[in-house]
Length: 210
Image (cartoon, rainbow, N blue to C red; front, side, top):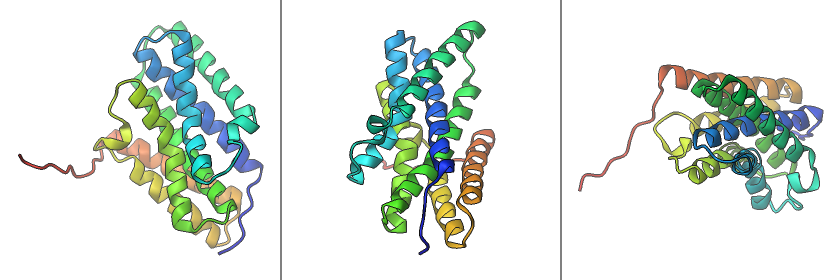
């Protein structure tokens, strides 16, 4: 295994992911007609929940958003901006929610995987951390909004995150630069998720007959 070093790329990718998931969380909360406090709470749970779970699992304290307020501020700002934008349009666009969620999934897959590699965790565990970072916030959001989480539906979702994390680690092992590997892996997850939405890629359903 080569040495992994996170740089400005991963840091700013993390902030982009926070913003994207905050947008998705805000739109989901808006569908449920929550008040402004509820909307911001759901947006922050969506944006920061996955990273918080990752840090707890890796015993990385203090948790990232607690020690660095930038993620929290970006999440609040993105949520407020989305509320203003959505209020101006006065319509809900499901596509915007799905695109924002797809981008957050892509970015957090890479940043979560990279942070695990920084802690010298095995590649297989790094993949798990990447997926946890990417999907946990959305699961919390959907549960709080009384929805079946996207990751538990038939849609191809978490499996794309797994493939993206594996691709990222593979690219780094091939001596591809952090910047290029991040861009490729993020693009792969994002495009794959959008394709899954567009062409309705589904996983097989498990059903037990009574």
